[in-house]
Amino acid sequence: MRDHYKKNLGKKSVTRFRPVEEVHDDILFAAVTDDVAVSGEEVLAQLKITAKAGATATATAIQNGITDATGVLKDHGATSSAVDDFISKMNKQREDAKQNASKTIDKIYDEAISIGKEHPKLQGLIAGLMDTVSQLFHELVSKIVDFVAGIVKSVVAWLNTAWKSINTFFSSVGSWVSGWF
Figure (spheres, one colour):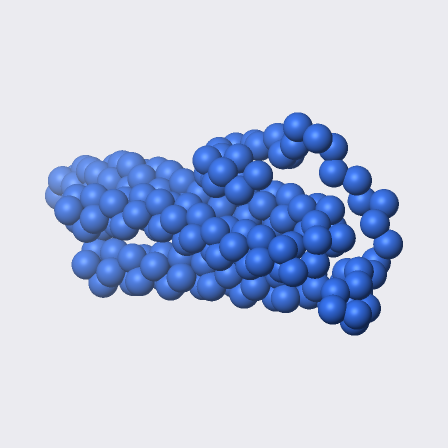
């Protein structure tokens, strides 16, 4: 399941993981481990916390990277080299989003495996949660990748429009000035 979702990070769509044997979620929400009843929600709570923290960290890191790259472009103006550098930095942010998500998925899966070994009767619930977590990370990366692609397209389109507008404006100013006298 882990590899299925990791290899599809950044792709437009991904099919849900389908194990060879169907996982049954007909487990009661309690398992007995060392003579102590443990609820399924208690066991899954830490995985959910880890998933949210990882997603937040990934999004924050990418936001900071995009903000920094945009600030540099703003400070250096829309020169050709500054735009090329900006586009390069944006492409790096896309790849960083995939790598950060992949690392976080590994961390969560490792934690899930450990919890599943400790609470074997809850493995169906854990597998179901991991499928959901993997889908959510896929969506997160897709949203970031699409956003970054949109920024790059907007900057390139703006530059093309800006250069045309600048040339058209000053050409008309030149014509206007030449007709002064």
